[in-house]
Length: 223
View 1 (cartoon, rainbow, N blue to C red):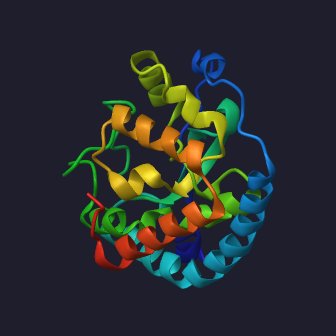
View 2: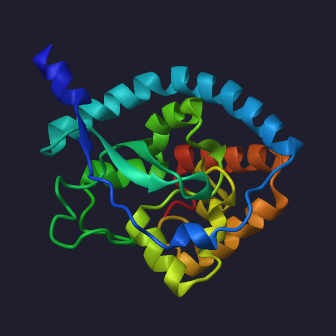
C-alpha cells in the first residue's frame, strides 16, 4: 500500500495572488453553444476518464521508477475569467526543476524534462489526468491551454490581447496546440486561441480532438 501511495502522491505548487490581468479580460463568451459544449465535455470526458485510466496508471509507475518525486502534480493555473484552479498532470519534469528559475515558458528540447516526460509530452499522455478537471468543470476538452498566474501576468503586459483567452473555459487540448506545439511563442498562442474563441463549435472541437488523437498515436506535430 505504501508503494501505491507513493505512486499517486501529488506534488503541489503554492498559488500566487494579486495580479492585474483579470481587469484586462473583457466580457465572457455566452450563448447556447456553451451549453452544448458542456454536454459534449461531460459525455466524452467520462468515457475518456475510464479508457485512459490504465494508460495513466502505467505511466504513473514509469514516472515513479525513472525519476525522484511524485508521479502526479497539481499546479495553479488561470481559468475562466481569471479564476484559479489546480490542474492535474503526470510529472514530466525533474523534481524541483524550477526551484531556481521560477516559472519558465516550455521550450523545444527543454533540459528540465525527463526522458519519459519527453515521450509523454510528445504524445500528450501527461495531460490525460485532466479528464478529471473536465468532469469537475474547471476545464473543457478543447480550449485555450491554461497558464500559470505569473506567466499570464507577464504575457498580458507584453501582449494586450493575451488575457482575452480567458473569456472561455480552458481546454486539455486546443487550436494552438494542434497548430503550434509546445514551442509556440506566447504571441502566436494568443492569436490562435483568440481565433478559436471567435469560431468555436462542437464540430470545431471534434476536429481538434481528432487532431489530438493523431498526435497521441503518431507524435506528428507535437514539438
